[in-house]
Length: 124
Image 1 (cartoon, rainbow, N blue to C red):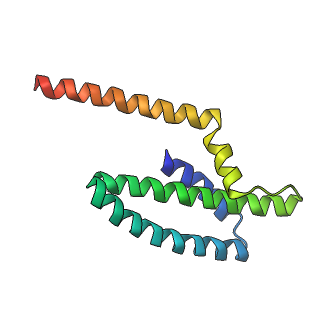
Image 2: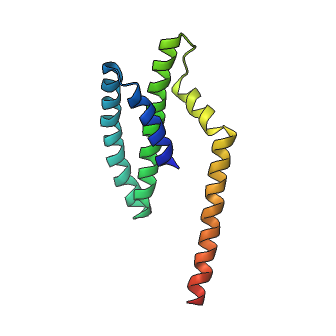
Image 3: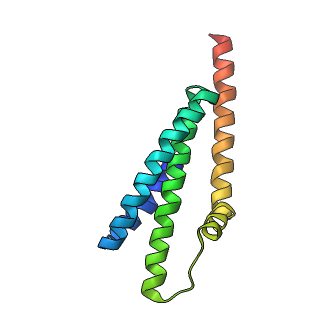
């Protein structure tokens, strides 16, 4: 889910690729690379190999939110619309009923697969 959200937001941001947007995106990617390396070290220390998945989710989530924020800044600048803060944007996304529904569905599907795998292993 994080990867698809990241892909859509980055595609939209790169679609508006003016030189200033590209410079901002490059700075964001540099910052996020440092964050990713740090999160891999910390998460793999505490969670083992699963920490790599957590670090990747964090990486994709941060990239998506920054790309969306950059896109919204360009969009609001071009149309003279009220500016959104990053915290306000993140809160609006995470509190949206579609996002909550998708996360719930993903958790339920993970739970069902885990139950099925546990029963399958018992019978093998």
